[in-house]
Length: 529
Image (cartoon, rainbow, N blue to C red; front, top):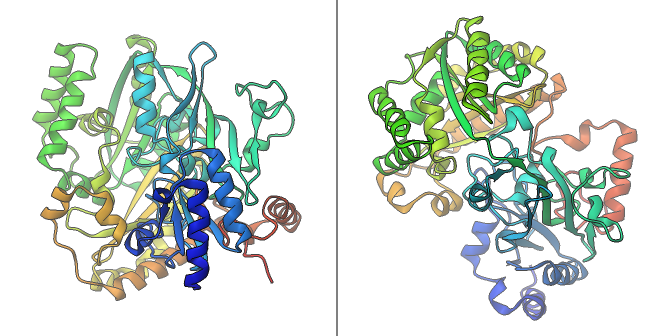
């Protein structure tokens, strides 16, 4: 590090952004350079821009000084995508690039700044009777549009409408040299951001890139009418294979907006981790979200009656959410899901879990830690529905020889299955282990929640085992040709590309970032000196 040069850079950046938007405090810089799994190098500086123009000037200033630019969204990641690998870096905290730019209800489009959260978008659209098709992640209270489009956000609405990237129409992007690019129709003279595919799909180039091709500053999404009716179903299945088969049947049908499977450890951990405040918030959402007070009271009563005994011990649980214009249409979709699941031995359960999830969809930030204060980190892969049994069996075979070591170091493994669109089975192993907390765990979870937990002692052997298993699992994914919706510094996208495609990516990166200073080490290797 060169303190004098960093001081000069800080002064130059303050000239563009204002002194209050240049972050020099070491503790805050450390927080902004740490995700939920790994701590990075301490960046030289961090900045928090409020508009595209000053961000572009700041980025130009940073790269001219030879420093790397590392874009960061809401931060709730475990892939290292915004974790600096050098001290000669400036982290760009995009959370103040927030708010609605244009809501065109007649044209059914929404343009927002990239730091806008999914929860904030829901709050704007709900009173208008509108919705994004895909409308957020579990962490949508903090997770941002820019982060989601850079790293493949999935969940709410994904079984029917795919990922966030599947529903974006155009972008505004700041390049490494300060150029501001627009994609989609807004890139044309007199163009309007309502259509994506007139000419080559330049929007797609900047999606799922982990911020390595530029910093997203605005995004335009298509809208749908908000479904007038929603209902949920839950089912118990005997084992992973039958649960996966049932999930794939529901996913292929297109009858559900969300469809996901919890394994027994996930269910037990989730039910153990609740607290009175969050339970009451969810219950309040259930009562007020059913269309009538009577229906809400009945739904709330079912949740209270079910209590914490929602899923039989040892069972896998499949949860679906159906939505549509009429109660009859939703009932038909839910009945179809029930019939599909029954073919695989599924038994109906109280639908309290998906009811609770929808009552407060973004109310789970305390889940960055387990109910006993343990940490967790996931990896995920996407396969065709027909290959779901293979990836499950191969992962189980990978884990089996580790059982004794897992127990010795307090490491447990759970899995989550999710349907994405009609053609994708998402397989997500999650590793849990007791270990010291990272700065982001303390910053995200509610202080009152943290006060109820005891921070575990450092567990280097457990952490090393998790790292080993993550790498072994990624080896398996590579062998099966199974992609992820994320990249960061975790997934081996570049090395797995065909040589011809890799050359095209190299040329694109060189055109947009000739010095290799936009999030170096992500998407493609660092530029060689």
